[in-house]
Length: 169
Length: 260
Ligand SMILES: [Zn+2]
Image (cartoon, rainbow over the protein chains, first blue to last red):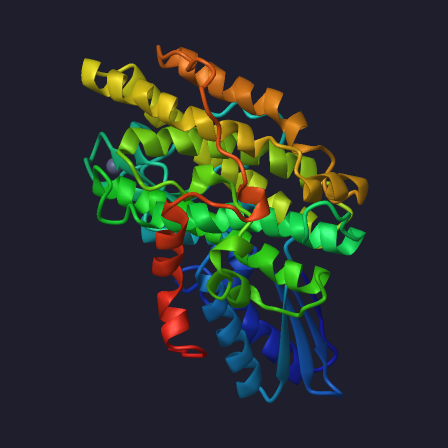
């Protein structure tokens, strides 16, 4: 992400926008998730252009994120233009380490490395996922699709607790 | 588009993207019907999530169609305010929801098809088509994996589940050919560089994927069907389509312009 700003007010608005929480996983910011791709601040015009990318094509959180960006910009006295960029496609590899740690503390297993594109071997689920509650690696996938498209539902065989896993994409 | 007349490149491109979007939109609607009807709650969520992926693909593509065809129409105009004869989806996706095995047979075929389709659009001359394909290709891998797991479980499960999964494959067979028909808009789209391959050129890889799963699931590929669906790409649909559209569109049409 590049944050271009030339003034204190400019960097304050960029900072505020980068800290907007994800509506579905509020412990991580849209910057931590890699959804926020660019913030360009024009101090003279009191305007900013914010570029975001959806996690999944049908991600219902995008509208809420867009609204929140416009709101934060307005609070700082800026008019925001929010651009949606599809390409390059979002990948969980863009998630920050601090974002992954926040997920783990929240009880969501963070994603492993995304699979390289290429011929599909399928069987995406054969990888070690550590239980965010007790740290056991003895976990089983219950469903590919958890409470949202970006998560799978798993169960820990050690502490018996269910948990969400942020799927590598 | 009138049968027999060659479409202009732009109109052909718009018609092609519309067909891709309509397949995704109509299948999204069918999959959404599984909410509260799937065999377990995890499956309610799984199918709703696949539906949402497809809906997202359709939305982005509809917005692009409105630019390509010069009409400036938005996603709701395409999804909510077109009549049956204006839809360009294949018959496979409009068929009524059957038992769960049928849904997995349909998803296995459709995801296998979409997997090859989006791969062929990654280097599209149209930036939106390429962008949607880049995202969708990743999503479809999960759809394919999901269908594969269920076909394996059902096919290699009990006698009853095996019988019903086999019957489901037989049910889907007559709708498969239509996915791979080289319709006029697809031919124009290949010429315009919108997509690298014709639908017929996607078949070998897609079918190979299905056959591998079917074989691993101890099932057999159906004999060539005695009839096949046709007409979807020209707006000629089967009986379930009108009911599907009625349910999809009635709120928007009863309350035009309503927001909430
Ligand atoms: Zn545990």
